[in-house]
Image (cartoon, rainbow, N blue to C red; front, side):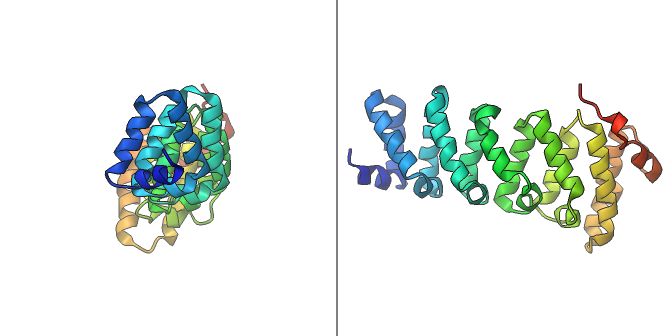
Length: 238
């Protein structure tokens, strides 16, 4: 198969099914050729709606070969922040994070470090941050929480249609990081003064935060208790 046909079929509504069939059933020499072509034309296909389907098959195909995995990841980290905010590219990154182990994906996480707050405001990358929250080891979970806690623009995340779900996921998911969760809740409470939408204030102040604090066995109407609970001695690492 000629290289130009691989590209044309991969981006075609019907043709990409043929490429997927080759990736899953043809002899290894042909599959290897498809893999090499796709890695050499990664962005073209990763940012195409039908190409995305082929990318998912290639990512799965590489799952049993660490050298192939590394080649896929190396393609992502060249423009990782662009991919995670792209309507199709973000799904490519999510597929990698879901199928490959943390050690292989760590360079992708490193590229996103320092950008979690900004990425949580984007429709597409916010979904990826939620995937990171689900998949990341404790060390990275702590890094994400700390970044939100130190952000001077937390109110923007609170009132974002996408970021608010990232914050909720953070509070609900990080059961081993009670101190950081309480610190984040305390920061959210303070940030509500900068939120102009009353409905958002009401949603967080009267519903979500009360529920989360009750789950953590902290009195929701006692700010001092929340502040006291964020002392370093309360960090749970086990």
